[in-house]
Length: 234
Length: 270
Image (cartoon, rainbow over all chains, first blue to last red; front, side):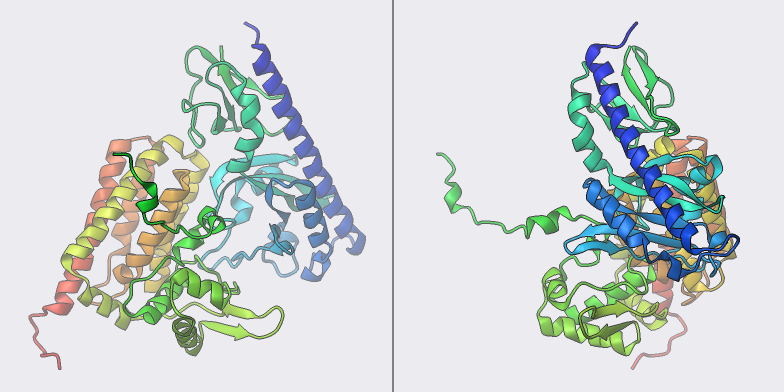
């Protein structure tokens, strides 16, 4: 059976939104590559003083994406001269972008081990743009968010990821009008079939859909690499 | 008779912006009881740093904001900050980018813990355990439904880090981190929040060797069994395991309290 018209329209508009966001994320990663390739000799490690231009990139990303609650770049510890990870991440503040503080000391109380989090490790493994969430970011922004990132390279070698955070709350506001136009229960799912947004109480954010319920089916979104899909009435 | 709403007192719920900003950090600044407010501020900020809710290098809100959030006079807040400064936990810098910054982790303070245990009744300790069990059982039930395999692998590593941790402060951190991360896999900001608050109340006392050392191997085994139950989606068993685990913690706290307060080896207190 073919999709209902409103469902097809919702799929189209949500896919377009993510494709645009992916393009912006990849553009940001490319800008980080350009910034750092410029100043660094091939084979040399990144030092903290090379990172000065990142704030402008993050501020620009936050300005263009008013729904983002954070944006920046995180580096592979193997590519840093200090051997410790670097997480250059900014949040919008009343006086422009404000840098967020993270505990990046592996022995620290609140060690933020981002290299093992999927928004970093998946981008590193696949070399492609990725999205992770919804997750409770208790060591970072203290919010319920998704993180959309793209890997960047320096002289052809993986060096980290760049991207932005968006709250589940903000995505609800963006996508609910389209989702509500679908007759019956529908939900936007992430790559592990976790609900990002449902159009009713039937599918709640955070729940995992282990198998498509009867009278419904799961349709992949035409958004490369993010693994998003939509659960719609059959 | 129709209700005359004009007769009802107006309840001021605070700035709307403040109400919306329900981050974990708002737990740190919630209103205080009347007594010993300055000590309570020192205590709450120290615990928040110990548990990693406030980070070394982080700037505290300005003094006016903090005294409003805590609901204390400016002088009371300044007293508290002076104590934290004397302990070397915070420093105040002047100038445009000034403010009060967190310098280092507070010391584990066995004396303060002993006092807490002696002044807290058995009924209160049991009640703390009751709240912890309620939160933890709900957390385990949701984690069974919602956690993903890679998150459970991470949780398993965290469980192991407890037995590898050396010394009471490191064990307390590993233990609380495990329970908070478990709440994170349940995908609930509120449950994670509640777990952070509850851990802050008990975990240091639990691991500090006031009378006997708490058994890290056994706690680790219990954490690992819990992760297995969650990953096999055995919700009922997982809930029972976590309730038993917390009951054992509660018994240890009560036994320690009783040994401290009513030691048979009587040395009359002055």
